[in-house]
Length: 301
Image (cartoon, rainbow, N blue to C red; front, side):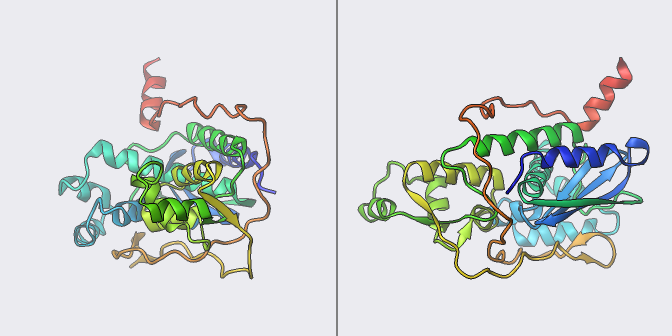
């Protein structure tokens, strides 16, 4: 069964690292697993095959063209300055880059914790990532928000596993689509419903559309409650998840190309646990705090 205390286990692993402010990579073993990139105790990125990274979000959504992305990667490869190149070329604003890196890290942590966590291993060394969050991300906030999201998702009725459950349209959804109804099937909801073909999970749809895993999961949960989609029974086990992006030339820069279609959903064990409705505090929005701001306040006090 997927456990909502996984964020607590990650927090324990971070707190147990030498000196409490490590640099390097914390690899979380499990399904889907993932890698937390650290710089002086600050999280700079989280990579997981369970959630789209910043490159996928930018390219699949059309926010940045493939040509512009490739050019920025080539120019920033030597000094791991892809993010700075995106800002310098006016493809992203500095605040927008920080926000996208933060949300991708949060989605990566959510995917790791929503799956199976078998253990963690820390490899020390200089922080190296092709597209780190410029100001870093406060690990305490990251793990707190991850736990909040897990509890919020578990409180939804009916509960939905973002990694395991395959979603398909119901007869009612097909009838509304055939009638051209503009009510509940507009905008982003229509795009998500169009991708729910019975073979894809929330994770697969997030990759396909270039949207955050948690946002897609919540929207699918709403569509499920409205009777527009349903969980499709599993057939034979599909192939396992794809590997993390391979570095190019040892620089830590991912290949500058449009990400391939994601593999079929993998199979972490069990559904999310059922919790009392409203107990999660899903409407309590936590204010984002950058690690840089947190450390600045500590110095000023």
